[in-house]
Image (cartoon, rainbow, N blue to C red; front, side, top):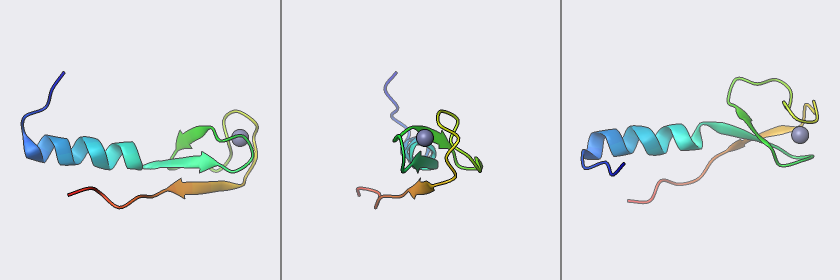
Amino acid sequence: MPLDDPFKKKIARHHLLMKSVCRSCGALNPIKAKKCRRCRSKDLRLKKRELPK
Ligand SMILES: [Zn+2]
């Protein structure tokens, strides 16, 4: 589904980045997760990238 609305695009991209990544297994977890949903490691990092303009 192509998004033509730049505002929606911005939101969509924002939500794609609002994830945390497990340092042990690399699984994506919700940003609020305290533990990895796959391996239960607590070693999560935020998936953070500069938004392309
Ligand atoms: Zn994990």
